[in-house]
Figure (tube, rainbow, N blue to C red):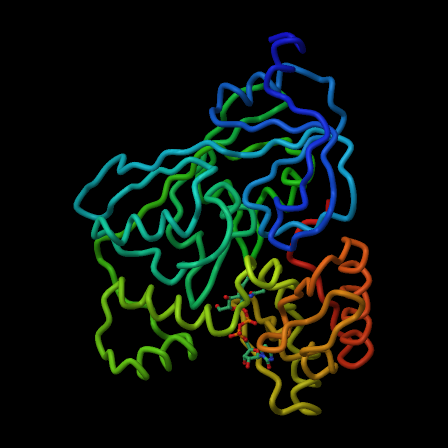
Length: 346
Ligand code: EPU
């Protein structure tokens, strides 16, 4: 594939201000919409772009300015049941599909399993990168395999669950930095939805919502509706108040520090991990540091959930960076805990 043929796919100087859910200004020097794996092979055959980045729904991205490379907008679609046995349904979806629409579709077909992950913004292709999770369930729990195009070779590789090395909001894609330079681009994801379904309603706020609705034995669609109700109450709609969901990871610290902090702050929410370490609630640490509902410039930490950074209108990316650093510094000073941002900075 020559650069001339590749050029047919590419547009120059594209405005990105409506392409990310934080609504930050910026332009891409080159932009291509990718609707099939074959088009990725074309990109792989060309070395004319020093920098490449993959854009999905832009729901986990902080644009810090203009991007001087090639932005690949992932638009590979399609979703289907690829198999069924006594144990499970197997569902495959293109990387450009909306995650929430996939969840809705599986529930409408009568295949439960993804209900706790309803209303998470973003695309199917982005879901494995940070192993999306909510209300007691992670993508990894329902994941079978993915296909990704290796841009070094132009070949499609299949990665199973072990190869993806999933952890809390983490995978091999983040560990290797593949999401930063578009070295490996996810094209399709296959999920396994077990037929031995059990309702996962242990998460406090979800249980409380089902209680409120007086549902003792919820089915999967009722759980999805409850998740949607909780999320809608606490998390701002990006179309109304631009944001990227949780802005920091919940920090995982060693048991000694967690104990020390709990002695000084008995209210500190703590979640013991399998490896002996303890996960802390970043939202609580940020609130206690005085940032809940507080603004700096045109950005701020959301008044109903301090972990969500919101753009109050017209802020450029550097204001996001300044606020994130101020919050990190105050949490570090007060609790000796380091917060790590969840979104990718471009
Ligand atoms: N909290 C506060 N103040 C706040 C926010 C939270 O004190 O302003 C406390 C809560 O009272 C609670 C604890 O912190 O005791 C945890 O809060 P919450 O249940 O709201 O969940 P979270 O830990 O803040 C995580 C995920 C969310 C996911 C929810 C539900 C991360 C970084 N975030 O938030 O994911 O929806 O649990 O499972 O793990 C996302 O990643 O974008 C996201 C929204």
